[in-house]
Image (cartoon, one colour):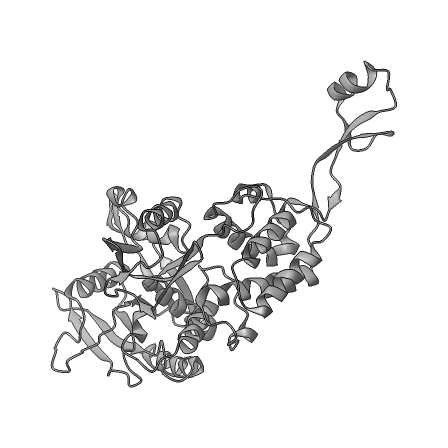
Length: 440
């Protein structure tokens, strides 16, 4: 398995020039999960124009960066997995995939349909196969239980008025030719053969040529069968811009988003379904942050108001400048107690107990203390992913103010993010650890 920040690896059958062009297209088009947040928080005007950040190339070799996921092109697949498993040789791909989809189940920014009942599915042995399986499983279930029909504008010649009459067309085509009984009408019938269903059917046709798993093939065939009455035509992501979902069909939102992601990266001709190339590339720091946010919201939301990426304050009030942004901001529902949480996807591999800084970067400490004083909050928590089954001991730094009348307590903790045995262990242990960590 390839991990984040790997050593240089040979390209094999992949063409470097073509692969670089595709990755640049992906980056330029921002067809990356978390793209908006990633750009807002880390990009400067110069960085907006930068070269794609996913892979580094040197001759006919490449090196992975801080993104996990996969790249599929010309029948070849590059899969990149989280570095937290890098020092665990016994970790199988099945175990890693289970963890990844477990994390996804708590992520709200990813907008991918992960079915909790399917987290133990082990037939697929690659990330793209498992992603497509989840997409197909979810889509088949939604279409079967809630078929989507949409009002779409249709222009046709009728013998009696319906909707509104297109008088210019009627005069041009009917009256001037003596066909007074041919009335050009514009109306909006409720159609099952609509834009959204055509796109879904087309995407499923594309994916059928990219999977090997029999159960996934069966699901994709089931979807195309359910959409048998829908016209089978090539589609583009821009077609979905005209789709406005009724609130009754919110289950289709993740389907639309993923159809867009696939089609935005797709290079195809109008006559072929066999040229799918696509990728899913996720900056792991955002996966870790989003997972922790979702976990706290689900299990501790009854105690705390959970604000993700809270950014309502500036260091300078007049003029307003230097905006603050907290990964997670908690407010106790009864006491009003405030807690700032910052997630640091920086595994402290070789933490030395004699290190008085406890592996915390000085810049991170500066940032957290300044946030706390500006927010009027005395409690800050820095969360790091575990580097082994045994968590390092938590440590609290007490930072006094210059006047000595107040202090900020910065608690530094490792939390269970992965396990050598089962993701269920993470679920159980993380609830216990966070319950303890949040007690000040």
